[in-house]
Image (cartoon, rainbow, N blue to C red; front, side):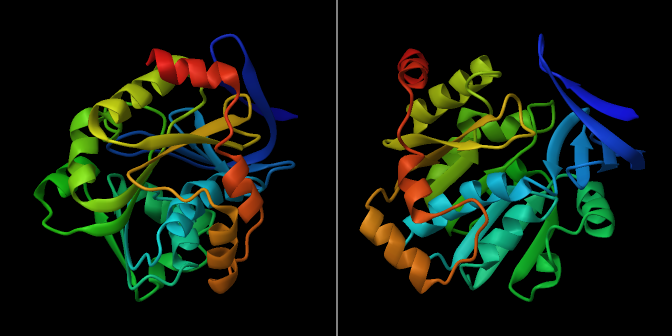
Amino acid sequence: MEWFVEDYNGSALKIAVKKKIVEKFSKFQKIEIYETVSFGKMLVLDGKVQLTEKDEAFYHEMLVHVPLISHKNPKKVLIVGGGDGGSLREVLKHDPEEALLVEIDGEVIELSKRYIGIDKGAFEDSRVSVLVEDGYEFLKESKERFDVIIVDGTDPNPFSVRISEEEFYKLSNKKCDIFTTQSQSPFAQRDYFKQVVRSLKNVFESFKIYLGFVPTYPLGLWSYAIAKSFELNLKVVKERFESRELETKYYSPEVHVASFSLPRWIEKLIEEA
């Protein structure tokens, strides 16, 4: 049997694969797509698992619905990254007037659409605009303002690191009501997690970390950060969830509120950052 292995500096993820569908080097990174034995299709960038069909909703729903439910009326949404289309698919469930996706690597978009298709047609939706360019440069030059900005970036690399730094957060702070980013594994990627928290502290008046479970991400525990505004009232979250008629696999109003309850060791990491 063939195996894909992702190393975590002393531990690893091992997934049985039927075949490799794509292996390609774009201008920015190595892109691989596999057909796995038990997780469906799998997207890998520079050797790091970005998604599998079986559990991608665990990640995309928490990244998207927590900030969009926290907003009373999200009509204009920006996604930075997210070339696989999963976050875009979830954003459209809130029926925005406009959703803009800015992805630096157009090859990720095209290969994901062709071989995986988790966007479920989102890229062709009339409300959607797609720009293939650097998210930092876009936000730096743009005069637009958004209800929500969602950062759906890859693991840190020379091209993606800019969207996890203070200057990018400062730009975002000026141009949205709510800002959200994935913030990696606080257990397996502690230094990067603390770097994100440190940048958030230096830029935003208020932010919170929340957690989710993604089996194929480093050791399963995943974190997200939401800044400027967040909704923790279960009654309000339920009302918005029901009125928008959201259909989800992982996310629920109860999970939304519970995800902000942090273990003490993570609270200490946040204090140390």
